[in-house]
Image (cartoon, rainbow, N blue to C red; front, top):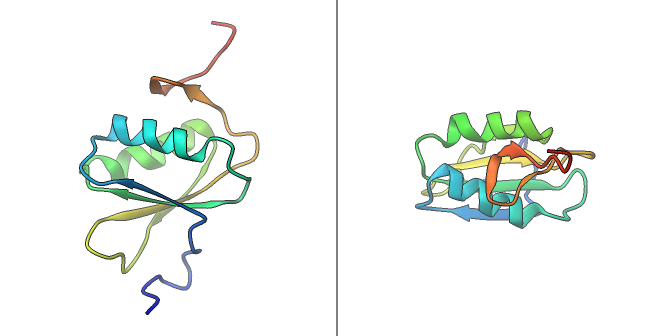
Amino acid sequence: MNTTNPETPAPGITVDGTGLLCVTLLLRLRKEIDGAETDTVVHVIATDPAAPLDLPAWCHMTGHHYLGPVPDAAEEPVYALRIAAGARPTRAGAPWHADDPEG
């Protein structure tokens, strides 16, 4: 049975961040989407209460498209984003900092 809202695209990648704090979740997300094709939809399972604020902020910073919470998700909160062409990379160990080779 498909419980995904027809307005929410099906994921090409699902990142399970159950039990992770947002910084760790963003590090995992960054690793999982590295090399993903533009326009790939990513569903992020995130139980950290800060996720509804942190995920859209991270997407804004990097240039990825935040699609919002996935309605009718199973037991855990799920959020969707779409991979953007030319998104700004972040530092390997610091997802809130742009990866600026110049400095």
